[in-house]
Amino acid sequence: MNGRNREVEQIRQEGIRVLRAFAWAALVPIALISPLAAQQDSIPGVTLGLLYEAEFQPALAVQPFSGRLGGETAAARVEEIIATDLRYSDRFQIMDSLPASLVGDQIDYQLWDQLGAVWLLSGSLEGAGSGFVLVLELHDVVYEEIHAQGRFPIPATRDENFRLATHIASDAIIEWIYNEPGMAASRIVFSLRTRDGNQDLYLIDSDGRNFRRLTEYDDLTMSPSWSPDGTRIAYSSRKDTGLPRIYELDLETMVEKPLQPGRNGDHQTPAYSPNGRDVAFSIMGGNRSGIFYYDLERGCCLTHVSGGRWDDFSPTFSPDGRWLAFNSNRLGTPFPQIFLMPASGGEADLISPYLHGQEGYYTSPDWAPFGDYVAFHGRVGRRGSYNILVANVADRGRRLRQLTWEGNNEDPSWAPDGRHLVFIGRRDWGTGLMVVDTATGRYRMLRRGLDVRVPDWSPALGWDGP
Image: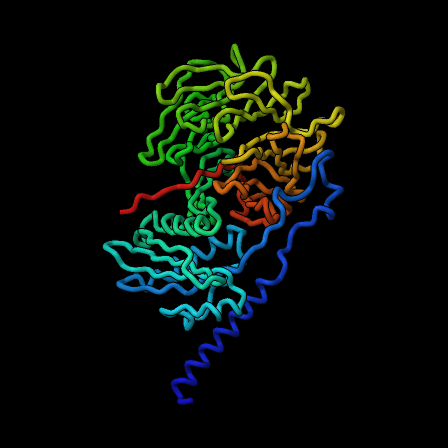
């Protein structure tokens, strides 16, 4: 063997050594939170644990991305964003940060198979105009073939849509493998309380990046809600009248408009219907309290759908728009419960774990983007910790799961993939935004040290390209 061949073989062996370390890590069982260790913190009648059975998580190797025609400097950055997105999906054991020597025109499927990889992702970032084109190939290592491939426009790194466009490519990989939506190309809006006592709206990307302020009212602005197409946000604010009123902000034009339903009282907790045309919200006080619909397209036509001598608030629609979950104290106690009723109004069914003498306090429902799950938070009695619960409304809440049992956990909101939840976690170290995967029990800190209120996770967001 000549000197050149020995050098190539040394590089190859070094790559194999590193990959074996990744493969060994991929074989380590996933550490899940044990429900048995927390039985003393469970809510009576509620099962501790996950929504789904444990699933096999295949090893996915991310080959170092190459660059050409000006894409050389940004290729590693795009690769890092995609690898992080895939890791946060909680669907794979990710093998990334691999030796650059493994980049090549030919894929050695037998080598990757020996090292435990089930999927292999390769990519190239090519300069195109003022931006790039990302070329991705997903390889099925077991069958030794290209499973899927695609080309994705990526704007320049200084463009505000650079990360969003890359997240869209990450979600395509989830779609290729599972035929299910991802969550990378999404954002979370929430109300942040500052030291002066005011609350304004802020945005953050699904991976915890691009933290930025959305409103600057220096007043109490609360309960934000995304429109189904992700272009508008409705919220309640006291900024004009000193009383809570509903406003809608167009994120493309940044033009805000107030809703003018012509009724007194406190207007709170807006939620869009799946068609995006109507918004439901609560009016408390005045001559008739309850949940109302307002026709955004026509700018009129307030319709009362629930209420009475009690307070109904925090509505959330089923994906098909036929059902509504909401809070109410209609049982005659000061403690709110979660109810389910037809979206057109009618008889309401209790879905929170009500026990006589241990009524509990349950609030902030959010319906999953597809399926029959409603998440909310609650506790037993007047004191104790809040935890995140999920009800299966297909059986009117007879099956409930408790997903948290440490600290205080409030205000859950579903990701567009229907398996992750963002919520407010209050721990000894302070308050922050946290994410839990309902299929594995993994937690992730999204943003630490913020006094946040009522986050809402957007639908999947798009980008039209240059």
